[in-house]
Length: 275
Image 1 (cartoon, rainbow, N blue to C red):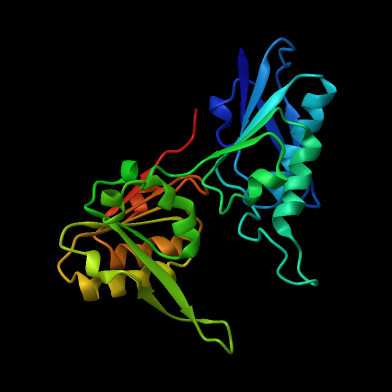
Image 2: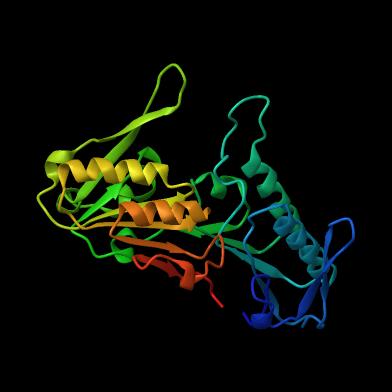
């Protein structure tokens, strides 16, 4: 299928040129500068990190649908994916709100990178997604999953008994009365026999979980070379926290165009955009 791209992250790399107007009240408004080729499918590259990103995408879908041109979405970071269930009657089911907005646009395909759970596939029509290839993101003798969510996300990549002997499993311990995190625990410390350990998960905010896991790993492997890979880095504080606790840190630019010149020396940022 021949495609024309609309790149909402980098206008210079967009086949169809556009500009975004900021109205005095703060509302954003997208205007296409080029005519759409009605014989070509449109691929929209965007991240949805806030309401403005979503509103611009909704406007763009309105334009494309009125032109009767088919389109697909490539969305490495999706707002609301952590709120993937109803927590309480008085809290919004954020992922469903975002999913309903995307479904209303009627894209032919929606491609996501490293969603927080498989719930996105149930809520977003014509959705596919990619999880990190754990053994492909880093060279290490052992891989560590910080909690039950990470175990569910990645454990199936280790099918053989031999592979499973190289997977360190952890969980978060919570105060039963307050529900707040009280610590971290390595569930199978006995499997570690020496070598590099790489912690893998989907998202890092302030980095507290990864710092706590690093401290527990140092107890069973004080001299180990510790790596960490997360796909979505959503907070600059998390970069500093990880850099202080790990020998190597890697994440993607799914959430932000991180300035590589400002990162600590032991930090790498992977380009995840299909430009």
